[in-house]
Length: 273
Image (tube, rainbow, N blue to C red):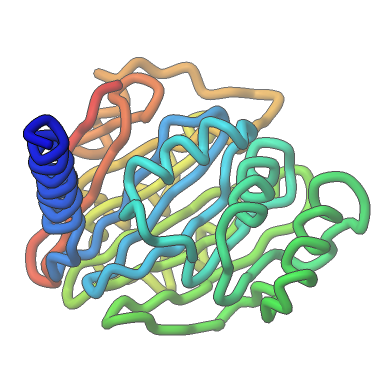
C-alpha cells in the first residue's frame, strides 16, 4: 500500500512537471506583437512569416520536404497545425516540393501562385492537395493586395518563364521588406511601388547587383535567395556585395535569418545551425 501511494505521488509529480514544461514552451511561443520573417536553411527558397498576432504564412518551400517540415516544427507552436496562407513565387523544383510537404501536414487558409501551373509533377500535387482541403487558390497578379494582422502584402510584379519570379512588398507600420525573386523584368515595377528605401531586400544571389533597382532602393540589409538560376552567375565576394548594403547575409553562410519588426524599427537576428 505504501509503495502504491508513493508511485501515485511520483506519477503526479511527473505529470505536473510535464505540464509545467509545456506551459513554459507555450509562453515562449506566444505572439509578441512583432512581425517575424525567417529565411529558412533549405536548398532553394523558403520563408516563414509570423504575424504580430501569431498567424503564419509560408512563401515557397525549397526542394527538401523533410527539412522544411523539421524547421516548421521548430518555429511554429507545437499545437498549431495550420498556415493562414501559402504563396509560391515560382514553379520550379527549388520552391514547390517543400511546400507540397507542408500542404500534406498543415491545413491551409488560402493559397496564391503564379499563373500557368502545370497539372503534373509537384505542381499538380500542390493543386490536388489544396483541392482536397477545399482551400481557395488565387493567381498572383500585379496590384494584388491583402492584409493580415496589420501586415500588408502587395504583389508588384509577376514574371513567368525560366527566369520567373515575383516582386512582393511586405509592410508593417513604417518598415518594409521587398521580395525580388526573379529576373530583371521586375526592376522598374519594384522601383515604382517601393519608392522609399527598404529595410530588407530579398534578392537572388546569382543576379547582377549593379542595377538601378538595387541602387535606388538603398536597402538597409540584403538577404540572398538561391532558387533563381541563370547561365551567367554573378561571382562576387561578401566584401564586394557590401558595397550595396551595410548588411548582407545568405542562409547557407549565416544560418536562419530572422527579420523582426515592431512596425517602427527593425532588426536582424542570425541563428547559425
